[in-house]
Length: 279
Image 1 (spheres, rainbow, N blue to C red):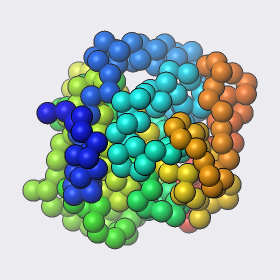
Image 2: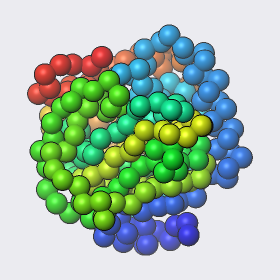
Image 3: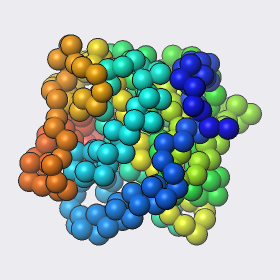
């Protein structure tokens, strides 16, 4: 079953902390976006465009990444959760190569984001390749968004995709874990307090996911200094975020300048109190 009813999306997000699958693109469209990504990966080879050799905030650098985040089907699903005024606060490509040891430890996003309103945001994870148990699809701990933020510890593991290698300091009830298997073009939504993780890729194909973090303009940064976002739908009546323009062309000088400013500012929150900074 794929979600198409806005009220059901909101209901399941509130009840479980997540919902999936949501059909955003046909597989052929997702394949075209994947090809564009992989072409730009080659073009950007050698450039540092994020933390730990990741591609962070690609919506500020590449037109196709901005187009994905602006998809009406995706924004309709997001609107069902946070309302009609939608800003894109962050995004990253999470790519696991075949046989790589890369993984994501159990964590809650809101432990590190520094955003004040925990209900005025939602994250989407869109598959550009099949996401399966074998290649390290996401795992959700159902209902964990209803508990307070738990303590985390920093591992700074090279294989942990997360910035600080942050890990929730708690036992995981495996009976409550859901595997988020998606076909290319499908997405999941999850709450910022939801505990989630993913295992290494033991398959013979790349696992490519694009995570996008959407906020209501009513939200605001309370840990770092100035914060940034891109208005995608509706209006901003608050001015808590400096609005960033979409890229006019891929990897343009202006786009890279904005990208550097946003990455630096948001790292203030992500690494606040950490024993070491970005690498």
